[in-house]
Length: 113
Image (tube, rainbow, N blue to C red; front, side, top):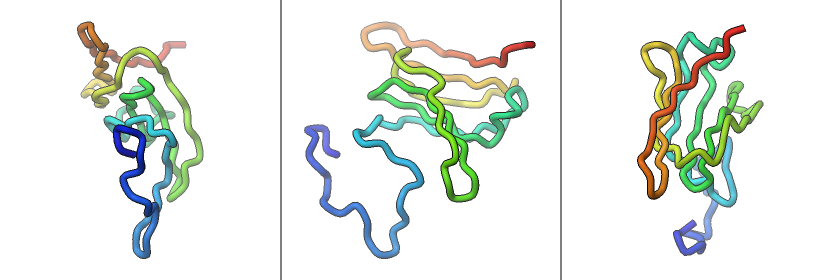
């Protein structure tokens, strides 16, 4: 969609074009995408993490082959997710933009039992 809400084009598919595995309407304004490969969250290994600008969401998506089998909203409303990286320590680092304020880097760490 264009910024004014009108469609960019009428076509949503064409011969030889693969359809998306996941989409959002209205758009969540996907920012960063990161496959988690660290060791600190073993149950999240190879999961896809998605950041959202417009809806300020941080999402986890589990993919099995060519299917999305699980979606989870980790948090929302903490700021526009600008970047997601797996650190050398295995933690997940998220850069948040706060409109009109200083941004911040958030580190996700596993809960110890």
